[in-house]
Length: 522
Image (cartoon, rainbow, N blue to C red; front, side):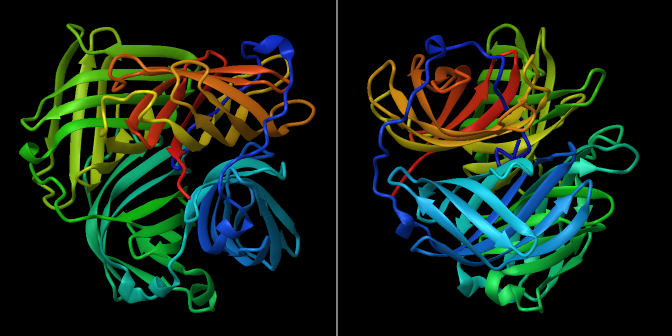
């Protein structure tokens, strides 16, 4: 997944069930309190996807918005598996934001521009998607604190999650998660990581991170954009500082092409099983690499008992268009977790469970805080990663999760008479009402470069129906309808993390798609 951003997961459309008899529609006028003035300051961004040659592409950088619709300058590190690495300066640009927080943003460089659709979650963060049709990619952006553009601000233990491609012998996916320590004086003093590399026979398990270095860019790009470089474990990265708690990184070396985030680890991270309790929800995306390889995404929840056991498991998967649901019962066995005490202080842990028909599922995680972690799927033949969060605010009802949501879905549509399998990306906004049916409406932009004809669909009208089951803590059904041509139905399972965050996974056979919806604030 993107990297649900954050991860490099996969997406959807075409060849889906029709809705509304092929009707088209225009979204109602946007409502809300956003405007051009809402995007004001310096923002770090990161996004990844697929270029026109089918190669991996990733970009991490920063842009400066003046609050009046102009981008005064920007910079990005661009990595392409087909054309190599480059640093791209942008001299100007423009943007528009409507009342709902949706808008467009263009960055202009000497050799062309970068066109984006964006949706604000708040004045300090949002999601974005490429729309210039030179590639399909999506990701996130966040407001930078320029006071933290100094080495001394980068001091502490950071938990990271990188995903992308490995080039050791074949071009295959890789996931790397872990923790490293920075000393505020240019040194990476050590840490622990787990690699799940498609070119290796098995996941690495916990590996000690040897000392490395970091430095802020001396060319002036640090002072303006918060750029720096970091090297460890034989791997080289560029990074952009969001603030002292958050870095966006992109890998630039010959062995791997990855991208991800590093977040400052808080005090009080569980160091033993008794400290890890409560219910947790996770979303991972990636691929299965055994036999007939396929895109894969999984969403689930479980309850940890503080004594090494997990229960109340609900699990949904879409593997190459084949959906599976598992719920706890006599079919589940060996459901356990363990906080790593050998690598004490790393925040590392593992959990596993076995389903009588689905097999054994194994995971490793690194805690950012007692309630947040990055997660790597180490099940046999799976390379995937994503977020893990404590579930809070239940029981969930239509009334207590009603509000305005920004979302990013990404994945792969699996082909039809009109399209070839290719990544697709979606960003949009919907309003969820407190009623129990037909309770969502909004608009989205999406791209499908594998589609013949026009592969970009702006401002498409969507409605939906979220049906909450029981207390809402397990899988709920969320059906979303695209009313514009080609009219489409997306069938999601929705796992509610909290009244402000929902993890979503498509269960249709024609695509593998997942993403996150977060409640907007102004």
